[in-house]
Amino acid sequence: MNALISVSDKAGVLELARALHELGIGLLSTGGTAKLLADSDLPVTEVATVTGFPEMLDGRVKTLHPKVHGGLLARRDMPEHMAALATHGIATIDLLVVNLYPFEATVAKAGCTLEDAIENIDIGGPAMVRSAAKNWKDVAVLTDANQYDTVIAELKAHGAVSTKTKFALSVAAFNRISNYDAAISDYLSAFDLETGMLSTFPGQSNGRFVKLQDLRYGENPHQAAAFYRDLHPAPGSLVTAKQLQGKELSYNNIADADAAWECVKSFDDAACVIVKHANPCGVALAADAAGAYKKAFQTDPTSAFGGIIALNREVDENTAQAISQQFVEVLMAPAYSEAALAVFKAKANVRVLQIDLPDVAGDTAWARGRNAQDVKRVGSGLLIQTADNHELTVADLKVVTKVQPTQQQLEDLLFAWKVATYVKSNAIVFCKDGMTMGVGAGQMSRLDSARIASIKAGHAELTLSGTVVASDAFFPFRDGLDVVVDAGATAVIQPGGSMRDQEVIDAADERGVAMVFTGVRHFRH
Image 1 (tube, one colour):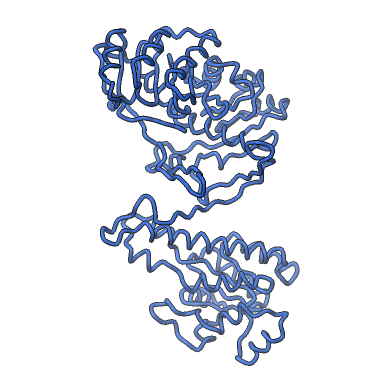
Image 2 (image 1 turned 90 degrees about the horizontal axis):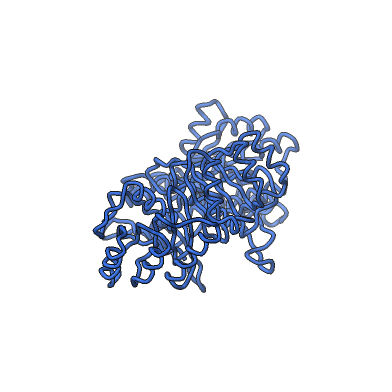
C-alpha cells in the first residue's frame, strides 16, 4: 500500500505518517510535508521523483500528473485499468492525505488583498481529493486531522480501511471541496475590481449548512423537515445547545426556542423570556432567575401555557420548582444546578437545553452569537438582508414632547424597545419596572395591536397605569397613541418618520405624556 501525504495544516500529520510507516505503508509526499517527514527520519519519496518532473511555477504544478492521478483513479477491479498502470509504470495510491491551502482563513484576515486570496486558491489539492473521492472503493481520502485516528485504528485492526469508512471519507471530501469552492465563489463574486472593496452581498450566494437531525415533521404533520446549522456556527447560538433531557425537538419547538433565546441573551441583567408561536408573551428583568421568571409569567399566564422559556442565568432549585408548576415545552438556560435538574427529571417530557452565552464583548455579530445576515425563502428565490442587530442607547433618543421622561421611564422605554425588536409586526409593548405588562403582536393594524395589548393586560389582571409603550414603527395617526394613553401609558418610544409626526407629537403634548423618537424601526415579519 502507498499513501500520498500533502498538507497545508500539518497538525497531527507526523504522528499519522509514523503510524503508516510502522504498518508497512509506503510514503509519498510533496514540498514542505516531504521535508517534515524526512527531517523526522521517515522514509519518504518525493512526488517529483515519481513523476519525473520537478515542482514548478512556485509550487503551482507538482501533483497534476498521470502518475499521481492514474494511481488514484485506477479501479482495482478492472483488469484494463491495472494493465494500463503496469504499461506506464504507475503505482497505485491507496491512501490520500490532503488538506487545502487556507483560503477561508486568508480572506478572513484584515487587510487581505486580492493577490493574497488568489495565491491561497488550491488547485492540485482539490484535484487529487476529487480523484480519490471518486474512486472511494479503492482509495481512502483524508481531508481533516480528526479522521486520522479512525483510519489508523482500522488499519491496525484489519489491515484495511472499511468500505463504510471509505465512503464516509469520500462524502466528507466532496463536502470539503464544495465548501472550499463556495468560499472562493463568495469572495470573488463580492470583489469589486475597480474599488478593491467587497460587497456585503456577493454576486452568487452559496449557503453552506450541515444537517443536525431529521425532524419528525415540519410546521404541520404533513410536511417533512430537518434541522441544519451553519458550517461555522456562532458561539452561544441555538444550534450549539446541548439537550439534557426530554423528547426530540420539533420544527416549531426549534423556531420558538430560537426566538426566545435570541431575545433573552440580548439582556445583561437577569432576564426571562417566554415565547408562544414565535412571539414573546412575557419578558422581565429581576435580581435573579426566579424573580425574572415570576414577573415574565405574570404578564400573560394563559399564553405561557405550553410555551418556551429562556433564562440568561443559571436555573437553581427555586426557579426549577416554580417553572415545573406549569406545562413547558422547552426550557433553555446557560446552566442548571444539580437540584434543578432533579426537579425536571419528574417532568420527563420537558425538553431541557443548556446553551453557553456568547461573549457580549465580541467585536463582531458572530462573536456575540448573532447572525450577520437573515434569509427568507420566497418562490424560487431568497431575500437576504443584514441582521437587525441595532442596539439603542439613551444617547440615541430624541425627546420630542414638552414632558421629559424620568430616569425610570427611560430605562423602561429602552427595555420595551428591545422587547419590541423580537415581537412580530405590528408590535405594541407595554412595560413597567423591567416587566412586560401587555404585548400586541402580528396584527394588520397598529391600532388593533395596541388594543390587544391592553386586553392582554386586563386578562392578566395587570394595571397599565404609569406604563411605558414601545411601537416598532411610527404611529401613522394619533388614534394609536390615544389608545395606549387611555390604557394608562405615560411615556412612548417610537421611530418617528411619519408625515403626521407633528400631529402625534401634538397629541402627546395634549395628553401630557412623554415621547421619544429612535430614528430606527424594527419590523419583524
